[in-house]
Image 1: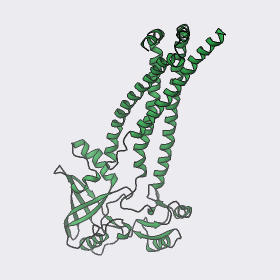
Image 2 (image 1 turned 60 degrees about the vertical axis):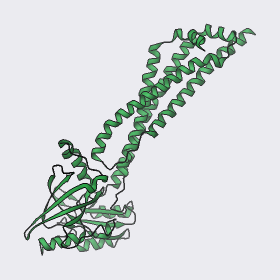
Image 3 (image 1 turned 45 degrees about the vertical axis):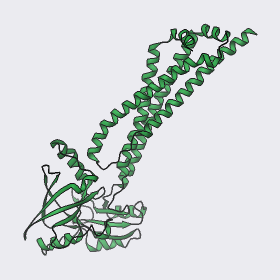
Image 4 (image 1 turned 180 degrees about the vertical axis):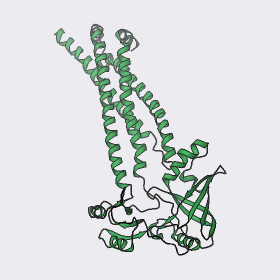
Length: 403
């Protein structure tokens, strides 16, 4: 084997092999990165909410620069709520109850400097919140209030406040360690409470508290002051129902739910990743032809040596093996370097994603690496078959010539 390799390696072109190496590396890296990014980004767009059922929608009246399109007021009266509830596609509907007082809060983690901000509270009937009733209740006089925060607030905290001040990031696993102090300012005095954060919601862009606390606090701090709800929450039979969409459009209602947008974003992500992967596969295919051209030229230059080796008794399989091992070795090196580049690139964008979506589970790189291994094996097999065919062609031609 060593003797054969010494005879055949004399005409190897390093620039041609380097061209194949880098072309195949770029193609394989693009394919693996496309697969990995799709796996990492898809859970963000399709994540379920732990507190709001997928058949619940939140709707509000459409607003333009001239005001609302569905009436003079941006709020819902009882008649509009009842009309929605009477529709075939709707099972039940209820309004959001808003706090009638000013709220400020300070949130901190592990004794770090607190984030202070003005807030607002809203509530919905308890049956619309998918949570243990024992956890989602408030008794008058208690200083502890259960709270559900929108996940966008946590993303802003992690990406802006915490990162700029070197504070620890907040994730679902650390929710119990968040210290939240709530201060209420109203005409009837002030109140101080401790917020017990139960988790983060993907679909509710509001700070949700139990309806029992909302009713008690409004009556206690701002008695007699009420407002009609500006948003409704409804349980529907099918969020994709065409009748539902038509009703929303005819009444100029906007559905504050990201499920349709998430579906479109997921489809767009799938299309973009498919295009990127096709480009990567095209580059890998071109690199395959570069390698085959290089080996064919090498075989052509060594035709006389190959013929002599075949004539003295070496089999075509043994003669072709050095070229096959060369191609396979290059492919394995390409795969290893592509994995290293994938890890480096992924570590960069995962740092950003983890700040915006700390709850995201790590998908790992096993699938992307598996795709890379499959490409490596496929290209190596094609290389081996092409080389074997070329050498056997020389052997067969010599047999015909001898006859």
